[in-house]
Image 1 (cartoon, rainbow, N blue to C red):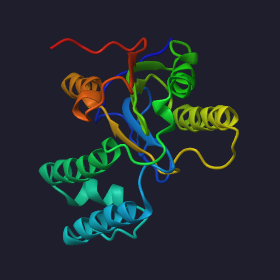
Image 2: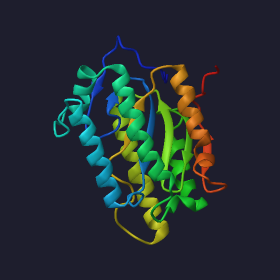
Image 3: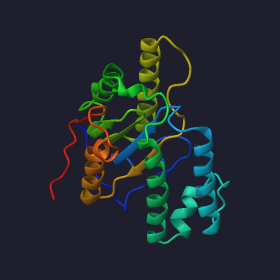
Image 4: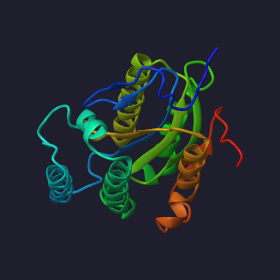
Length: 223
């Protein structure tokens, strides 16, 4: 039986790099974002990476250290970690919401491909929560999977949807950006914040009908 739960500091937590999720805990709930490969021009992406590296260096963390995420948890105060997340998540979201790139997901049939992939194993392999398919990126809440299967599932979503989207467009090549972003949901209050962000993302980005918002079997807790 699936059992999605919030972060428990008494349980083992594993940190990984270059794959989703970066912070792993069996059965955890995650807020995950991935984006189309052309959603950010190279120069904007480079500036974002440079700013992130400068912030880390200013706080005594070597951005070239492959374990820098783990170092943050040891060396930084909780408020400093929150500042890092707010600062760089906000910058990235602002750029994504600008609707750069070809925005393949603006087409309803393309967005439907992603929705079908997310919902396909909802309730059997994982519990899908709130999600939004924006013109050039995707946000979702998902939980209830062991960490090794979570890694494979995210890559599976991207691989399957990339093939379908390429077939529909009559093209080939990369569809999704390799690097993705995630946050481990720590409690019910955080779950509500992420769910609210997902629901309000199209309106705050100035969209009217170019996004698909939905929810799977994972309910958002009431206040």
